[in-house]
Image 1 (cartoon, rainbow, N blue to C red):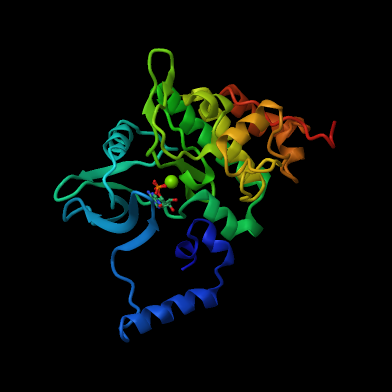
Image 2: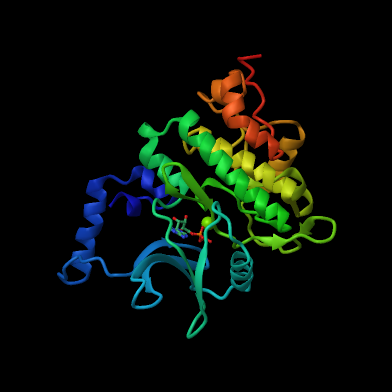
Length: 299
Ligand code: ADP
Ligand code: MG
């Protein structure tokens, strides 16, 4: 099925024949077993853990419900933090926790968000997606969810199209609170650890000082919009080494270099049409998110 074809970046080169090739290899290496998919399917292998698709039954009267289960493969102190933060949240644009299983090992049980990550959804449904109709609604959904997080004094720190899940064609939800933290009395959080972070989505003050706030989440929101309006492009600014090294990227950002203007979104997103602005962008700008600046070609 198409949903499972899409594993992060690998999906772009996967053709149905390659999928079948995988199944054939599976048959050979399992000495001729039938390629039957088990009840629990691994949706995604992560660095610390995996996400599985499963079924839960709260009681015999309510029937079965599809869920996504995140479990750890390697010990990570952050997992309990991720769970505690998610358990506090209830919002239509944030993935809901259904249960937490603690024995024999810790599992986070979430509502199953049918269409998977936004980055995969865009690559699969490129042809039918209309920026004006779909992307502006997704942008509004993400902004509503992020506004709620800000009110709870939580910074997400990993907002990206891969961490936004698609419930249906017109409804998305923020997920993956693996890096989320509470802010302090100054409304920011300082990361002193030396771990690897998704730096291409990070604001200059996060790259320079490890400082994260609702404002730095707004920067990541901008990068997420770039991914969306460029139909899933990697957010790379034009500069040697910026995609590999945070310090090089920071120096380039300090010079004023920014992500290129995504083609084809200017009319809808720069506010040239009054009607478009009133309908779509006014609610977003009320949330404190400025519309994208005009493209140089429009100026
Ligand atoms: P990681 O910390 O490994 O990045 P994520 O929480 O981002 O883990 O989940 C990885 C992937 O698993 C997502 O991109 C998505 O494809 C899938 N996934 C995660 N949670 C759900 C969910 N609730 N419903 C459906 N798919 C999910
Ligand atoms: Mg993720």
